[in-house]
Length: 289
Length: 346
Image 1 (cartoon, each protein chain N blue to C red):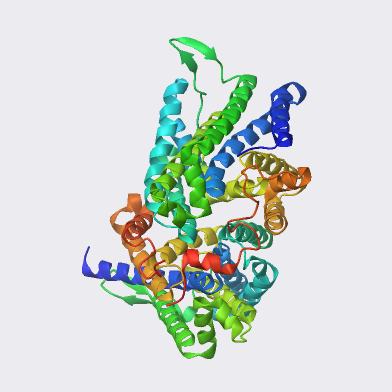
Image 2 (image 1 turned 60 degrees about the vertical axis):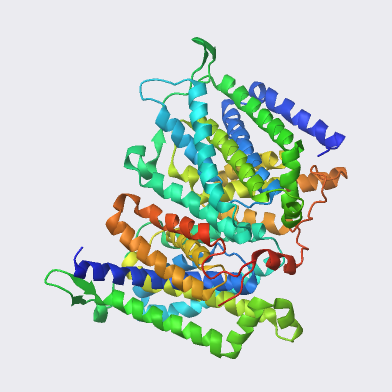
């Protein structure tokens, strides 16, 4: 593997890792703060991608579609939290898994009803359709660079929001001691609704900006969900830092796995997970119990 | 696990009803009943984990599907193989896979366990989904049902639907009795102790991880047995058999029937298969209806049909514990969950 190919693979891996982080951070935050294991999280990613496809068709531009799509995602997340998740706060994980599994069935069928079972492409916006030449024959598309930069921005924004704002303080407090937060007069239900809606919006956003690369198809949420679980488990459930490290590890492992071990590529990430869990059963940054 | 007289009578009547079904019902319903009984065995095996050991596996279909694939691999294209060889390979394969997955998984608990079993089963899914010689995502056909011969003599013919029906019925009853025996043994007492309070069981001097692993292997092997029956029945196996939708469905069946009861999950299989059949009749979007049904079960029927049955007969639930102790009831305080799983943002 020469240097240019290696560089391209690293960039691809990092870009994939960033997108995984957007999905996984919502998943881990929802668990860490609300104690909810939400397996319908991948469905939000899928909905985001379909919204991008649909809105781009309507308004003619992906950026505008994303601007319109994000409030929709927040609204969907809020509705799901109010209607379904709110019944699960004091229930065993088993029931959380099952109810959100029921939600997946509903979302998947709704998607088929609205958009059919075909594969769809989303056009890369004209400004970003170019590519950076690396050597005479190899180029790296602008759009992928754009994704990495945007995701880095979102990750930085999240870091600031959680560590430097009042809402972030409430979220952190909710994660470490829910009863105490309630006793201090903070409406924890409101915090939960915000966290869940934001998580849904992050997953949806990831689906939207990923749509031109991955194309849009039924069941795309299932795949991202499982990989996000691997990310979250590796990083330690509830830890955003862990989700970031896990997402980068998986992004790179998956990308290089496909290049170096094409026959076994789909198993590389699971093998990595098994190895990590063998030494750190709580994940890399998980709290020891 | 003392069972009430009403329940014992009900179970005997149910088995009797199953035994006479082939005479009363048409071929269609016989086929449906075979499917239900196979899913019943599959669901009971998961109940050993979820309801008795307190391990929520979201990847149980891995063993179900793997066993089907093993049958497809060992059955030659030219003719049937003997039952003993096929069964041995399927069960051994499932047991080895369960030992490997369980070895890593039982080190963890709570949500980690759910996610890890899910991830491992998806690993199997992607392996078979990508394997061209095994038919990739289209799956693979098995053209011959195994021969049941002993010393060269054919004992029974599984190719005959009636014979096969009774073979499956006997397997169902056998699996139930086997699991009952396991649960009454000292081993069974320990795993139930793990479910009730793992720390206390460990403090009593039991190596709880080893007990959990053995329980996981038993459940995986029994799921493999169900998978063997399913592949023999339909003559077909595809990646969907070990996908997470299958794992989710079997969990639903266990909950719907009533966890920790063994017979409950069999009733769950019965209700779910009939519902699925009805939903498919009503609408192409039957999964949408199924989704709403699943949510309704979680919200309104947390103890399943068996819980309802126990309430109606005024009997205690079959496993002797009050339904809903140990964190499965809606009333469990949030505190105890947190203590078990940790969490927190960095």
